[in-house]
Image 1 (cartoon, rainbow, N blue to C red):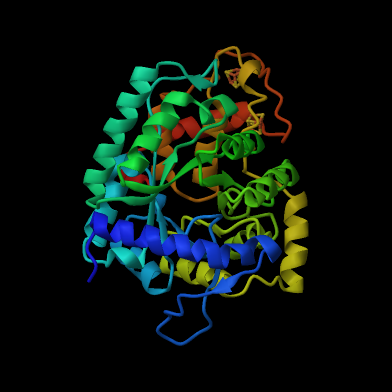
Image 2: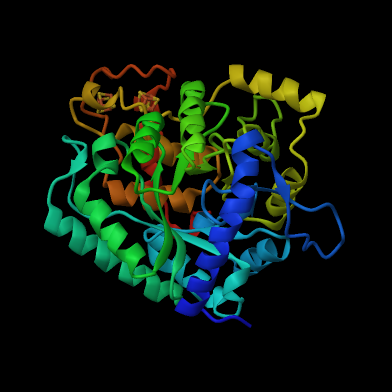
Length: 405
Ligand code: SF4
Ligand code: SF4
């Protein structure tokens, strides 16, 4: 069994270099997919895999967003099924997510999985859209990273992401890049990345221009109004050798009861149609959902019925907020409306009230936040009745913990 040590890291880096030279050309010439990891115990078809940019990582098109999972058996089952990349973050479940992974992975050979985590330093100035205090950025990034590594109990991660960035300035911030590059030079991450779920094209292009990031992790789904623009930026990233991972592929979770019966697997399949996308990190939380996502990883072909359902769903109601930020300046009380819409989506899309409650507690918005307005001054291009949704969702803060799901 290979241990979680630096020697393992160096060996993989060396082997990876060779793999990049031989296999990288395949991807850039024709965007071909490769098949590997034929690990399914039932001898069913292998998972479709793609190379992650210029990295040495060849991964199944479905990875695991561990964010909402709290069952170690589900993570083990995902690895047994052939999933190779596990994605977590410093903040998920208040750190319990990384701790859970640490306990699981101590018994798993280090060369049989890839692990990504994310850190966001303090010192972000919302009005400037950038980090403004270099000393604070470097210190807090390092502190959070060390805590994450202790929780994970491993010598290195495969990808270290700058977490949840939404501007070019923050992506290119020098202090952030310096501390991340130091960590990479220390051999404690093999690759660097940036993650975003708003203003995606701007962040993707900044990552390309940076010369620092190897991977981007972006929201990409069939419900986004600006999905064509995102795809164009993803093409540029792919051509520059940046690995593309997509998230929020479920576009707000299960469809409304009145909408077409579009499965989460079909939505995931849509996000993987472009071969600029190397892999996805659906946040499955049950064994049934794992099976559904694994089926997608074996066959990305749409059935005729799925094509029709996608077309219908694109025209239907959505819970997915594009995070375009157009509402921010329209609210005199400066409510964090996109985040509140996310909490609403967690509740009515994902049926994850505990996750929504964590977000609401973090935001500190109380029930009745909209009560002082005679009329809401916010107009959302997606047609969201934001005041009604805010009034509805903030009531969750008064619900006893025992009722949360
Ligand atoms: S609520 Fe509407 S306006 Fe505000 S960020 Fe979301 S999509 Fe944009
Ligand atoms: S009703 Fe709520 S969202 Fe609308 S302007 Fe007032 S505080 Fe802002």
